[in-house]
Image: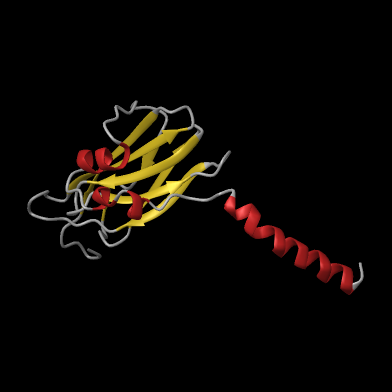
Length: 157
């Protein structure tokens, strides 16, 4: 392939990129649902984000270490085979419960990894729960949770 043809194809690909990305337009939940980010409990944050829902407790796997030695970077994995619109993550150890909301593109795979900062306090004894809510393309909501403990005063915490 000659150089001009190669450069021409590259320019055409770049011109098509914005149209492709707009198909994956996402919702800014911080702007559209600000109360979810101020909620002090998981239930209040879920209600502020999705309304009064009753998620089914199936189909969503949340993994985290049983005991996290470093509360500054707790690894969390969220997986599901359910076709989804959004996946929201919540926790009950820090003052604000909402952590993140992922917009899932059409036919997207729900297999997310993130690191969360969680605080071990005398109030919670280092015990907590991470909850993931999946909004399915079928209009139903699904839930997965994991219990964990954050070591207080450990060698890394």
